[in-house]
Length: 499
Image (cartoon, rainbow, N blue to C red; front, side, top):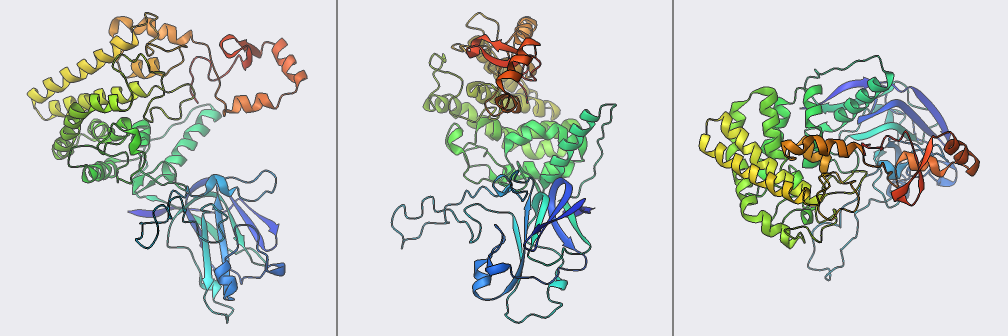
Protein backbone atom coordinates (compact mmCIF):
# COMPACT_ATOMS: atom_id res chain seq x y z
CA UNK A 1 0.00 0.00 0.00
CA UNK A 2 0.98 3.62 -0.54
CA UNK A 3 1.12 5.33 2.84
CA UNK A 4 2.47 8.54 4.40
CA UNK A 5 5.89 7.41 5.59
CA UNK A 6 7.34 10.64 7.01
CA UNK A 7 6.14 13.96 8.37
CA UNK A 8 8.40 16.86 7.31
CA UNK A 9 8.30 20.37 8.76
CA UNK A 10 9.32 23.36 6.60
CA UNK A 11 12.82 24.70 7.20
CA UNK A 12 11.79 28.21 6.20
CA UNK A 13 8.67 30.18 5.26
CA UNK A 14 9.14 33.26 3.04
CA UNK A 15 6.68 36.08 2.34
CA UNK A 16 6.62 36.61 -1.46
CA UNK A 17 4.06 39.41 -1.23
CA UNK A 18 0.50 39.67 -2.58
CA UNK A 19 -0.65 37.07 -0.06
CA UNK A 20 1.76 34.42 -1.35
CA UNK A 21 3.89 32.28 0.97
CA UNK A 22 6.83 30.06 -0.02
CA UNK A 23 7.58 27.00 2.10
CA UNK A 24 11.03 25.40 1.82
CA UNK A 25 11.30 21.82 3.13
CA UNK A 26 15.04 21.47 2.48
CA UNK A 27 14.80 18.38 0.25
CA UNK A 28 12.57 17.01 -2.49
CA UNK A 29 10.11 14.13 -2.07
CA UNK A 30 6.68 12.87 -3.18
CA UNK A 31 3.61 13.82 -1.22
CA UNK A 32 1.49 16.85 -0.39
CA UNK A 33 0.96 19.50 2.26
CA UNK A 34 -1.06 18.75 5.40
CA UNK A 35 -2.65 21.49 7.46
CA UNK A 36 -3.13 20.46 11.11
CA UNK A 37 -5.22 23.54 11.86
CA UNK A 38 -6.61 24.08 8.40
CA UNK A 39 -6.07 27.05 6.09
CA UNK A 40 -6.50 30.76 6.86
CA UNK A 41 -9.29 32.68 5.20
CA UNK A 42 -8.46 33.54 1.56
CA UNK A 43 -7.97 37.11 0.39
CA UNK A 44 -8.44 38.62 -3.06
CA UNK A 45 -5.32 40.31 -4.47
CA UNK A 46 -5.33 43.94 -5.57
CA UNK A 47 -7.41 44.46 -8.73
CA UNK A 48 -8.26 40.76 -8.61
CA UNK A 49 -4.92 39.95 -10.29
CA UNK A 50 -3.47 36.72 -8.93
CA UNK A 51 0.26 35.90 -8.95
CA UNK A 52 1.26 33.60 -11.76
CA UNK A 53 0.00 30.03 -11.48
CA UNK A 54 -2.36 30.94 -8.63
CA UNK A 55 -5.37 32.08 -10.62
CA UNK A 56 -8.57 30.04 -10.99
CA UNK A 57 -10.68 31.79 -13.59
CA UNK A 58 -13.79 29.66 -13.20
CA UNK A 59 -13.96 30.31 -9.45
CA UNK A 60 -13.29 34.03 -9.85
CA UNK A 61 -16.13 34.41 -12.38
CA UNK A 62 -18.53 32.68 -10.01
CA UNK A 63 -17.23 34.62 -6.99
CA UNK A 64 -16.16 31.46 -5.21
CA UNK A 65 -13.47 31.61 -2.57
CA UNK A 66 -10.31 29.57 -3.15
CA UNK A 67 -6.72 29.00 -2.03
CA UNK A 68 -4.08 27.48 -4.31
CA UNK A 69 -0.96 25.46 -3.52
CA UNK A 70 1.69 25.22 -6.25
CA UNK A 71 4.46 22.63 -5.84
CA UNK A 72 7.95 22.48 -7.31
CA UNK A 73 11.56 21.34 -6.92
CA UNK A 74 13.42 24.48 -7.92
CA UNK A 75 13.12 28.25 -7.92
CA UNK A 76 13.39 30.84 -10.67
CA UNK A 77 16.75 32.56 -10.21
CA UNK A 78 15.37 35.98 -11.16
CA UNK A 79 11.98 36.02 -9.40
CA UNK A 80 12.54 33.67 -6.45
CA UNK A 81 9.28 31.83 -7.02
CA UNK A 82 8.76 28.27 -8.23
CA UNK A 83 10.19 27.31 -11.62
CA UNK A 84 7.09 25.59 -12.93
CA UNK A 85 8.51 24.56 -16.31
CA UNK A 86 11.03 22.22 -14.70
CA UNK A 87 8.54 20.58 -12.34
CA UNK A 88 5.34 20.47 -14.35
CA UNK A 89 3.66 17.56 -16.07
CA UNK A 90 4.73 16.73 -19.60
CA UNK A 91 1.28 17.27 -21.07
CA UNK A 92 1.59 14.35 -23.49
CA UNK A 93 -2.14 14.34 -24.10
CA UNK A 94 -3.85 15.17 -27.35
CA UNK A 95 -7.36 15.88 -26.11
CA UNK A 96 -8.60 12.32 -25.64
CA UNK A 97 -10.35 9.93 -28.02
CA UNK A 98 -11.30 11.10 -31.51
CA UNK A 99 -14.93 12.10 -31.95
CA UNK A 100 -16.90 11.55 -35.15
CA UNK A 101 -18.21 15.13 -34.97
CA UNK A 102 -14.69 16.50 -35.39
CA UNK A 103 -12.97 16.57 -38.79
CA UNK A 104 -9.82 14.51 -39.36
CA UNK A 105 -6.89 16.02 -37.52
CA UNK A 106 -8.95 18.57 -35.60
CA UNK A 107 -7.81 17.19 -32.25
CA UNK A 108 -4.22 16.46 -33.20
CA UNK A 109 -1.79 18.08 -30.77
CA UNK A 110 -4.62 19.87 -28.95
CA UNK A 111 -3.01 19.46 -25.56
CA UNK A 112 -5.38 19.10 -22.67
CA UNK A 113 -4.07 21.86 -20.39
CA UNK A 114 -6.44 23.07 -17.67
CA UNK A 115 -7.32 26.75 -17.46
CA UNK A 116 -4.87 28.99 -15.59
CA UNK A 117 -1.91 26.67 -16.20
CA UNK A 118 -0.28 28.92 -18.81
CA UNK A 119 0.33 26.07 -21.24
CA UNK A 120 2.10 23.77 -18.78
CA UNK A 121 0.67 21.22 -16.38
CA UNK A 122 1.51 22.91 -13.11
CA UNK A 123 1.61 20.76 -9.98
CA UNK A 124 -1.25 22.39 -8.15
CA UNK A 125 -3.91 21.84 -5.50
CA UNK A 126 -6.94 24.14 -5.27
CA UNK A 127 -9.06 24.38 -2.15
CA UNK A 128 -12.34 25.98 -3.24
CA UNK A 129 -15.63 26.73 -1.53
CA UNK A 130 -18.35 26.71 -4.18
CA UNK A 131 -20.59 29.41 -2.76
CA UNK A 132 -20.57 33.20 -2.62
CA UNK A 133 -21.31 33.09 1.10
CA UNK A 134 -18.57 31.79 3.33
CA UNK A 135 -18.30 31.31 7.07
CA UNK A 136 -15.14 31.90 9.05
CA UNK A 137 -14.46 28.23 9.65
CA UNK A 138 -14.87 26.87 6.13
CA UNK A 139 -11.19 26.83 5.17
CA UNK A 140 -10.07 25.92 8.67
CA UNK A 141 -11.62 22.49 8.04
CA UNK A 142 -9.23 21.76 5.16
CA UNK A 143 -6.48 19.26 5.92
CA UNK A 144 -4.92 17.91 2.71
CA UNK A 145 -5.53 16.92 -0.88
CA UNK A 146 -6.69 13.35 -1.45
CA UNK A 147 -6.41 13.32 -5.25
CA UNK A 148 -2.74 12.87 -6.09
CA UNK A 149 0.84 13.24 -4.90
CA UNK A 150 3.30 15.88 -6.05
CA UNK A 151 7.08 16.01 -6.19
CA UNK A 152 8.46 19.07 -4.48
CA UNK A 153 10.89 20.77 -2.17
CA UNK A 154 9.06 24.08 -2.34
CA UNK A 155 5.36 24.90 -2.06
CA UNK A 156 3.63 28.25 -2.63
CA UNK A 157 0.35 29.00 -0.85
CA UNK A 158 -1.83 31.86 -2.16
CA UNK A 159 -3.61 34.00 -1.34
CA UNK A 160 -3.87 34.53 2.44
CA UNK A 161 -2.91 37.41 4.72
CA UNK A 162 -0.79 35.09 6.86
CA UNK A 163 0.77 31.65 6.36
CA UNK A 164 -1.03 28.56 7.68
CA UNK A 165 -0.07 27.48 11.18
CA UNK A 166 1.13 23.95 11.92
CA UNK A 167 1.65 23.12 8.24
CA UNK A 168 3.91 20.24 7.28
CA UNK A 169 4.42 17.86 4.36
CA UNK A 170 3.60 14.17 4.21
CA UNK A 171 6.06 12.03 2.24
CA UNK A 172 4.25 9.15 0.52
CA UNK A 173 5.62 5.92 -0.96
CA UNK A 174 4.86 2.21 -1.04
CA UNK A 175 5.27 0.93 2.50
CA UNK A 176 8.19 -1.47 2.30
CA UNK A 177 11.04 -1.76 4.76
CA UNK A 178 14.21 0.27 4.28
CA UNK A 179 17.22 -1.89 5.04
CA UNK A 180 20.33 -0.95 3.06
CA UNK A 181 22.68 1.67 4.53
CA UNK A 182 25.96 3.28 3.59
CA UNK A 183 28.34 5.49 5.54
CA UNK A 184 31.86 6.75 4.97
CA UNK A 185 34.26 9.48 6.05
CA UNK A 186 33.38 11.48 2.91
CA UNK A 187 30.61 14.04 3.22
CA UNK A 188 30.37 14.10 -0.59
CA UNK A 189 29.84 10.32 -0.90
CA UNK A 190 27.37 10.26 1.98
CA UNK A 191 25.42 13.12 0.46
CA UNK A 192 25.36 11.41 -2.94
CA UNK A 193 24.04 8.22 -1.37
CA UNK A 194 21.25 10.08 0.43
CA UNK A 195 20.40 11.94 -2.79
CA UNK A 196 19.97 8.64 -4.65
CA UNK A 197 17.96 7.09 -1.83
CA UNK A 198 15.71 10.11 -1.63
CA UNK A 199 15.12 9.89 -5.38
CA UNK A 200 14.20 6.23 -4.97
CA UNK A 201 11.74 7.02 -2.20
CA UNK A 202 10.08 9.61 -4.42
CA UNK A 203 9.56 7.16 -7.31
CA UNK A 204 8.20 4.10 -5.49
CA UNK A 205 4.44 4.61 -5.48
CA UNK A 206 2.94 1.26 -6.53
CA UNK A 207 5.09 1.41 -9.68
CA UNK A 208 8.74 2.44 -9.99
CA UNK A 209 8.48 5.61 -12.01
CA UNK A 210 11.01 7.59 -14.00
CA UNK A 211 10.12 10.86 -12.30
CA UNK A 212 7.51 11.61 -9.62
CA UNK A 213 6.05 14.82 -11.09
CA UNK A 214 6.19 14.82 -14.89
CA UNK A 215 5.43 11.41 -16.39
CA UNK A 216 5.22 9.05 -13.39
CA UNK A 217 5.75 6.17 -15.82
CA UNK A 218 7.17 2.67 -15.11
CA UNK A 219 9.84 2.52 -17.82
CA UNK A 220 11.82 -0.68 -18.21
CA UNK A 221 15.07 1.14 -18.93
CA UNK A 222 15.00 2.82 -15.53
CA UNK A 223 14.44 -0.52 -13.81
CA UNK A 224 17.29 -2.12 -15.74
CA UNK A 225 19.61 0.63 -14.53
CA UNK A 226 18.69 1.09 -10.90
CA UNK A 227 16.92 -2.03 -9.60
CA UNK A 228 20.18 -3.28 -7.97
CA UNK A 229 20.35 -0.02 -6.01
CA UNK A 230 16.68 -0.26 -5.06
CA UNK A 231 17.12 -3.83 -3.78
CA UNK A 232 20.06 -2.71 -1.66
CA UNK A 233 18.09 0.14 -0.11
CA UNK A 234 14.64 -1.45 0.31
CA UNK A 235 12.93 -4.80 0.64
CA UNK A 236 11.64 -4.93 -2.94
CA UNK A 237 10.53 -8.58 -2.88
CA UNK A 238 6.77 -7.96 -3.07
CA UNK A 239 7.09 -4.72 -5.03
CA UNK A 240 9.15 -6.23 -7.87
CA UNK A 241 7.03 -9.36 -7.97
CA UNK A 242 4.05 -7.10 -8.62
CA UNK A 243 6.07 -5.20 -11.27
CA UNK A 244 6.91 -8.41 -13.15
CA UNK A 245 3.26 -9.47 -13.01
CA UNK A 246 2.24 -6.08 -14.44
CA UNK A 247 4.50 -6.73 -17.45
CA UNK A 248 3.15 -10.25 -17.87
CA UNK A 249 -0.41 -8.86 -17.85
CA UNK A 250 0.56 -6.32 -20.53
CA UNK A 251 2.38 -8.85 -22.76
CA UNK A 252 1.00 -9.04 -26.28
CA UNK A 253 -0.41 -12.27 -27.70
CA UNK A 254 2.62 -12.60 -29.99
CA UNK A 255 4.94 -12.65 -26.97
CA UNK A 256 6.23 -9.07 -27.24
CA UNK A 257 6.87 -7.21 -24.01
CA UNK A 258 6.06 -3.52 -23.78
CA UNK A 259 8.30 -0.57 -22.91
CA UNK A 260 6.45 0.21 -19.67
CA UNK A 261 5.00 -2.27 -17.19
CA UNK A 262 1.55 -0.98 -18.15
CA UNK A 263 1.37 -0.36 -21.90
CA UNK A 264 0.77 3.31 -22.74
CA UNK A 265 1.68 3.57 -26.44
CA UNK A 266 4.90 5.43 -25.71
CA UNK A 267 8.01 5.13 -27.87
CA UNK A 268 6.84 1.97 -29.64
CA UNK A 269 8.64 3.36 -32.71
CA UNK A 270 11.93 2.62 -30.92
CA UNK A 271 11.31 -1.13 -30.74
CA UNK A 272 11.72 -3.71 -33.48
CA UNK A 273 8.02 -3.58 -34.30
CA UNK A 274 4.88 -5.68 -33.80
CA UNK A 275 4.15 -4.21 -30.38
CA UNK A 276 7.59 -4.67 -28.82
CA UNK A 277 8.95 -1.90 -26.68
CA UNK A 278 12.53 -0.75 -27.21
CA UNK A 279 14.57 -3.92 -26.66
CA UNK A 280 16.40 -2.72 -23.54
CA UNK A 281 13.20 -1.47 -21.92
CA UNK A 282 11.18 -4.55 -22.90
CA UNK A 283 13.82 -6.92 -21.51
CA UNK A 284 13.22 -5.59 -17.98
CA UNK A 285 10.85 -8.45 -16.97
CA UNK A 286 13.32 -11.36 -17.40
CA UNK A 287 16.25 -9.30 -16.08
CA UNK A 288 14.26 -8.24 -13.03
CA UNK A 289 13.13 -11.83 -12.45
CA UNK A 290 16.75 -13.01 -12.34
CA UNK A 291 17.77 -10.23 -9.97
CA UNK A 292 14.75 -10.99 -7.79
CA UNK A 293 15.85 -14.62 -7.56
CA UNK A 294 19.42 -13.64 -6.72
CA UNK A 295 18.22 -11.45 -3.85
CA UNK A 296 15.20 -13.31 -2.51
CA UNK A 297 15.55 -16.94 -3.70
CA UNK A 298 11.91 -17.03 -4.85
CA UNK A 299 11.54 -20.16 -6.99
CA UNK A 300 7.77 -19.71 -7.16
CA UNK A 301 8.21 -16.50 -9.16
CA UNK A 302 10.50 -18.33 -11.61
CA UNK A 303 7.86 -21.00 -12.14
CA UNK A 304 5.15 -18.39 -12.55
CA UNK A 305 7.04 -16.23 -15.05
CA UNK A 306 9.11 -18.65 -17.15
CA UNK A 307 6.32 -19.17 -19.69
CA UNK A 308 5.95 -15.42 -20.36
CA UNK A 309 9.69 -14.84 -20.55
CA UNK A 310 10.13 -17.76 -22.94
CA UNK A 311 7.44 -16.31 -25.19
CA UNK A 312 9.37 -13.03 -25.24
CA UNK A 313 12.55 -14.82 -26.30
CA UNK A 314 10.66 -16.77 -28.97
CA UNK A 315 9.29 -13.46 -30.25
CA UNK A 316 12.83 -12.09 -30.51
CA UNK A 317 14.05 -15.23 -32.27
CA UNK A 318 11.33 -14.81 -34.86
CA UNK A 319 11.27 -11.03 -35.32
CA UNK A 320 14.58 -9.50 -34.21
CA UNK A 321 16.71 -9.77 -37.38
CA UNK A 322 13.95 -8.73 -39.78
CA UNK A 323 12.83 -5.99 -37.41
CA UNK A 324 16.33 -4.53 -37.21
CA UNK A 325 16.65 -4.53 -41.01
CA UNK A 326 13.33 -2.70 -41.29
CA UNK A 327 14.65 -0.15 -38.80
CA UNK A 328 17.61 0.53 -41.07
CA UNK A 329 20.38 -1.66 -39.62
CA UNK A 330 22.41 -3.52 -42.24
CA UNK A 331 23.93 -6.83 -41.17
CA UNK A 332 27.55 -5.65 -41.53
CA UNK A 333 26.83 -2.19 -40.05
CA UNK A 334 28.55 -0.54 -43.02
CA UNK A 335 26.14 2.41 -42.96
CA UNK A 336 25.69 2.51 -39.19
CA UNK A 337 26.96 5.56 -37.29
CA UNK A 338 25.87 4.76 -33.74
CA UNK A 339 22.50 6.44 -33.34
CA UNK A 340 19.97 4.34 -35.19
CA UNK A 341 16.38 3.61 -34.35
CA UNK A 342 16.04 2.91 -30.65
CA UNK A 343 16.59 4.60 -27.32
CA UNK A 344 19.86 2.94 -26.33
CA UNK A 345 21.68 4.57 -23.45
CA UNK A 346 19.61 7.61 -24.20
CA UNK A 347 21.15 9.99 -21.65
CA UNK A 348 24.74 8.97 -22.28
CA UNK A 349 27.19 11.85 -22.50
CA UNK A 350 29.06 10.44 -25.54
CA UNK A 351 27.28 9.15 -28.64
CA UNK A 352 24.78 6.31 -28.43
CA UNK A 353 25.21 2.82 -29.80
CA UNK A 354 21.67 1.62 -30.41
CA UNK A 355 22.71 -1.51 -32.32
CA UNK A 356 24.74 -2.68 -29.35
CA UNK A 357 21.98 -2.02 -26.83
CA UNK A 358 19.29 -3.70 -28.97
CA UNK A 359 21.42 -6.76 -29.68
CA UNK A 360 23.05 -6.89 -26.26
CA UNK A 361 19.70 -7.11 -24.53
CA UNK A 362 18.49 -9.76 -26.97
CA UNK A 363 21.51 -11.68 -25.67
CA UNK A 364 20.57 -10.76 -22.08
CA UNK A 365 17.07 -12.18 -22.58
CA UNK A 366 18.55 -15.49 -23.66
CA UNK A 367 20.96 -15.51 -20.72
CA UNK A 368 18.06 -14.86 -18.34
CA UNK A 369 16.11 -17.82 -19.74
CA UNK A 370 19.23 -19.97 -19.33
CA UNK A 371 19.58 -18.89 -15.69
CA UNK A 372 15.91 -19.47 -14.87
CA UNK A 373 15.88 -22.84 -16.68
CA UNK A 374 18.91 -23.95 -14.73
CA UNK A 375 17.26 -23.02 -11.42
CA UNK A 376 14.15 -24.96 -12.44
CA UNK A 377 16.13 -28.01 -13.54
CA UNK A 378 15.29 -27.73 -17.25
CA UNK A 379 18.68 -28.75 -18.73
CA UNK A 380 17.41 -28.82 -22.31
CA UNK A 381 16.12 -25.25 -22.23
CA UNK A 382 19.24 -24.09 -20.40
CA UNK A 383 21.54 -25.56 -23.08
CA UNK A 384 19.48 -24.10 -25.90
CA UNK A 385 19.46 -20.62 -24.34
CA UNK A 386 23.19 -20.66 -23.55
CA UNK A 387 23.99 -21.56 -27.16
CA UNK A 388 21.74 -18.77 -28.45
CA UNK A 389 23.31 -16.20 -26.10
CA UNK A 390 26.79 -17.27 -27.22
CA UNK A 391 25.75 -16.99 -30.88
CA UNK A 392 24.56 -13.42 -30.33
CA UNK A 393 27.69 -12.54 -28.35
CA UNK A 394 29.91 -13.81 -31.16
CA UNK A 395 27.90 -11.79 -33.68
CA UNK A 396 28.55 -8.59 -31.72
CA UNK A 397 32.23 -9.41 -31.16
CA UNK A 398 32.94 -10.11 -34.82
CA UNK A 399 31.49 -6.72 -35.79
CA UNK A 400 33.05 -4.70 -32.97
CA UNK A 401 36.54 -6.16 -33.41
CA UNK A 402 36.40 -5.97 -37.22
CA UNK A 403 38.28 -2.66 -37.50
CA UNK A 404 41.33 -4.15 -35.77
CA UNK A 405 41.77 -1.28 -33.30
CA UNK A 406 40.73 -3.35 -30.25
CA UNK A 407 38.53 -0.50 -29.04
CA UNK A 408 35.33 -2.56 -29.31
CA UNK A 409 33.41 0.01 -31.29
CA UNK A 410 31.12 -0.45 -34.27
CA UNK A 411 32.98 -0.89 -37.57
CA UNK A 412 32.63 2.63 -38.97
CA UNK A 413 33.15 4.54 -35.72
CA UNK A 414 35.28 7.62 -36.42
CA UNK A 415 36.32 8.12 -32.82
CA UNK A 416 36.73 5.58 -30.00
CA UNK A 417 34.13 7.34 -27.86
CA UNK A 418 31.13 5.03 -28.13
CA UNK A 419 29.69 3.13 -25.14
CA UNK A 420 30.77 -0.13 -26.80
CA UNK A 421 33.63 -1.04 -24.46
CA UNK A 422 31.84 0.00 -21.25
CA UNK A 423 28.74 -2.08 -21.83
CA UNK A 424 30.58 -4.95 -23.48
CA UNK A 425 33.19 -5.30 -20.74
CA UNK A 426 30.53 -5.16 -18.04
CA UNK A 427 28.26 -7.67 -19.81
CA UNK A 428 31.19 -9.96 -20.77
CA UNK A 429 30.57 -9.61 -24.48
CA UNK A 430 34.25 -8.92 -25.17
CA UNK A 431 36.09 -12.25 -25.65
CA UNK A 432 38.33 -13.22 -22.75
CA UNK A 433 41.58 -12.87 -24.68
CA UNK A 434 40.66 -9.31 -25.68
CA UNK A 435 39.34 -7.96 -22.37
CA UNK A 436 42.64 -6.56 -21.09
CA UNK A 437 43.62 -4.76 -24.29
CA UNK A 438 40.10 -3.33 -24.78
CA UNK A 439 40.18 -2.13 -21.17
CA UNK A 440 43.58 -0.51 -21.64
CA UNK A 441 42.46 1.22 -24.84
CA UNK A 442 39.37 2.50 -23.08
CA UNK A 443 41.55 4.44 -20.63
CA UNK A 444 43.51 5.95 -23.52
CA UNK A 445 40.45 7.62 -24.99
CA UNK A 446 40.38 11.39 -25.09
CA UNK A 447 37.73 13.00 -22.91
CA UNK A 448 34.86 15.02 -24.26
CA UNK A 449 32.12 17.19 -22.89
CA UNK A 450 28.42 17.18 -23.51
CA UNK A 451 26.84 20.46 -24.69
CA UNK A 452 24.55 20.59 -21.66
CA UNK A 453 26.91 19.52 -18.91
CA UNK A 454 27.92 21.67 -15.96
CA UNK A 455 31.54 21.76 -17.10
CA UNK A 456 30.68 23.46 -20.39
CA UNK A 457 28.26 25.84 -18.71
CA UNK A 458 31.00 26.84 -16.27
CA UNK A 459 33.52 27.38 -19.04
CA UNK A 460 31.07 29.49 -21.04
CA UNK A 461 30.99 31.94 -18.12
CA UNK A 462 34.78 32.33 -17.93
CA UNK A 463 36.28 35.61 -19.07
CA UNK A 464 39.14 35.53 -21.58
CA UNK A 465 41.52 36.55 -18.78
CA UNK A 466 40.36 33.73 -16.47
CA UNK A 467 40.50 31.23 -19.33
CA UNK A 468 44.10 32.14 -20.12
CA UNK A 469 45.01 32.00 -16.42
CA UNK A 470 43.61 28.46 -16.07
CA UNK A 471 45.27 27.38 -19.30
CA UNK A 472 48.65 28.67 -18.14
CA UNK A 473 48.24 26.76 -14.87
CA UNK A 474 47.46 23.54 -16.73
CA UNK A 475 43.84 23.41 -15.51
CA UNK A 476 42.64 23.63 -19.13
CA UNK A 477 43.99 21.91 -22.21
CA UNK A 478 43.21 21.80 -25.92
CA UNK A 479 41.30 18.77 -27.18
CA UNK A 480 42.73 17.93 -30.60
CA UNK A 481 39.75 16.02 -31.92
CA UNK A 482 37.45 18.87 -30.85
CA UNK A 483 39.17 21.43 -33.05
CA UNK A 484 41.52 22.49 -30.24
CA UNK A 485 38.55 23.47 -28.09
CA UNK A 486 39.51 23.91 -24.45
CA UNK A 487 38.45 21.29 -21.95
CA UNK A 488 39.31 20.71 -18.32
CA UNK A 489 42.26 18.45 -17.52
CA UNK A 490 40.54 17.15 -14.38
CA UNK A 491 37.22 16.59 -16.13
CA UNK A 492 35.03 13.85 -14.69
CA UNK A 493 34.36 12.87 -18.31
CA UNK A 494 38.05 12.37 -19.05
CA UNK A 495 38.20 8.67 -19.87
CA UNK A 496 35.07 7.68 -18.01
CA UNK A 497 32.44 9.60 -19.99
CA UNK A 498 30.05 9.27 -17.10
CA UNK A 499 27.85 11.83 -15.34
